Length: 418
View 1 (tube, rainbow, N blue to C red):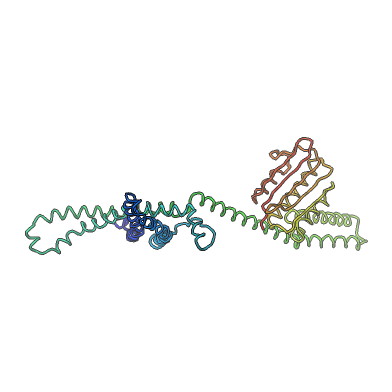
View 2 (view 1 turned 30 degrees about the horizontal axis):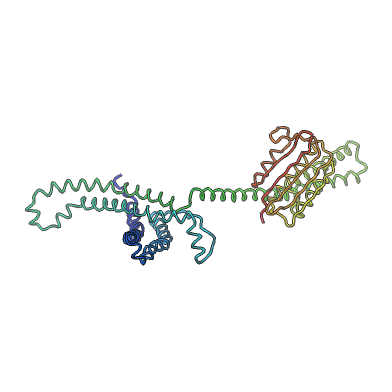
């Protein structure tokens, strides 16, 4: 219990002591600037040569600011095991242009404010805490100091023992208070350094958004890859077994002519069920991830979807280069689901699909001449809400224009990775 407050106190005290020279490094420049201005203002017309002397400490402060920031980061890392987050910096470059870009950033000015204003103030608190440690250690060990004095002094002043007892008690009290003061100061300095030397709140939010976007993209890619794996397993495994079963049943039906009528009926029924299972599995595999999309791209895949529909569908795909697999899959499923909705609900006689790339955006438009009245929030099974969610998963935009009486136009814009 007694040793609890002192755990890690040595490193925290060393952290406070190491901060003193870093916090006070800009003070001589401030004194230089104030002294030069004090001499310059009364004699501005008589001593213009002092103007460069007034600008020199400012230039030196510009130079030492990144060096002091690096020193503070090393201090936090070495003594308290903490890495201060780094703010965003301008793009790479050298020379005065890069330096000017750095000076124009808010992060640099926050660092300058830390070293020029917060640093000296923290140095005062550092000195106060170190003074508490020194006074506590000196008072708690007063008997050691007294017995180090000459014997004649101790004999001539017999009341020293009572005074030393009071000093020792006060020193011990301060000794238990000093670690708490040091811990509070370390937390204060850490907070100030995080705010002024680290990224701003806007930068933190931007980084968080970027991290979430990257992690979501990884999840989408993993899900798409898993769909591809399931599609391959079904196509190469269960589907091939069903095809072989259907072929065997067909051969049995055609070669075994002397079977009883009941047995032939069972074989015919099994053959029909096997073919229906193959057809259903084909639709399932195509819904997971059509092989033609991976092999030949959106144009061939969407043409295949249009060819299976009972209404004429015009497909126009203009893509100078293929988008990323995830965006390509989203575009395919959007068109496929939209055309399915047209057939089921729109009572349309024709539909048009347009896919084109405009800069870094993949534009997908599905239009039909049906009855219109499609409602994104309706629970009629149109699947429009699912389309909106699928588009939003890749930061795309979705809009649906469907007035009563038609036509219905679904427009989707997907960010197209280069």
